[in-house]
Image (cartoon, rainbow, N blue to C red; front, side, top):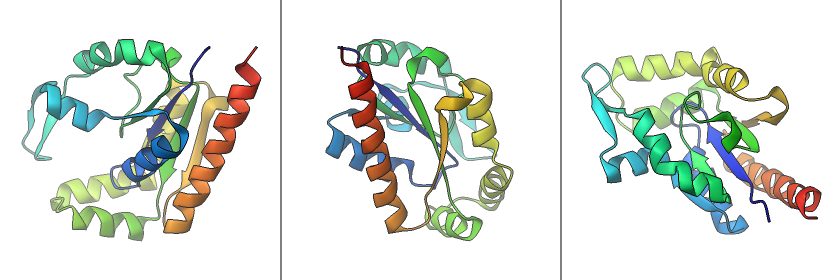
Length: 172
């Protein structure tokens, strides 16, 4: 049986990890946080002094994920999406948050001023939504609001319904 793969993407702080973990718990799909994967495997290609963070080695990430993605049944969580093979995902959800909500979340994380400002601008200009549309077929890319607890529950229920329908459509 074909197992589906889901990508959760969006600006840092929009709630990808919270949604991904809860969705995995309720759906039985495997959850993979690309940032954690990179940290555990030291899949880096240097350090960005300006943003005070490691630079991901995207080729090594793709190599590391290849087998799991071909098996299917995976939820991938990462703030970028243009380096993943298009064929990996059956659906892409781009989480979005209001600027004031996002600002508070990122400030709580201790982001420096430049990183904070750039991430807010990224959200304002829908950079990651545009990246998703450029990287995947438009019909599989969906935006989800992620401002409050009710949004989380609504998003989980919406995605669970989608998974259920996808399974029905692909079980023959």
